Length: 132
Image 1 (cartoon, rainbow, N blue to C red):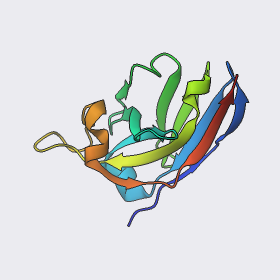
Image 2: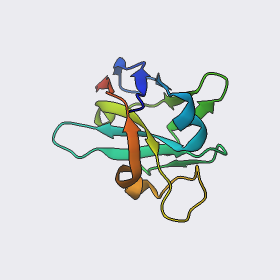
Image 3: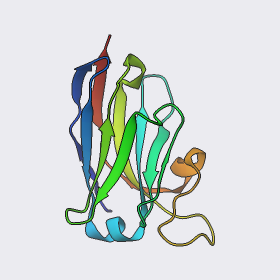
Image 4: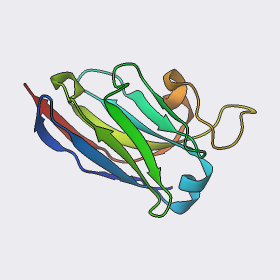
């Protein structure tokens, strides 16, 4: 079982910024789409950002323009830069390695709504709390 490890969570005021990191084992880092999810109290886990092995990124509408996902190939790490944070961004944030659907090219990312269905490995999460 490959273990991903998130870090960088914390408490911030509305309008502030945080950057999350996720250390990924070499094999899943090189082979798979990587993504960030979040889950807030009483809600299902949702995919919010993904990056394929070619560096192409996709975002869910609620974070588009405020969050940036990136890969650091030298460190086998992905990041989630979050700015203009809102209280509704409060959640536990997870990173994950995502398989590609069917005959899609290896390393490509499924549609955002399908990320959870193709999730292979995940971290234990890091808490982000945004106060108003």
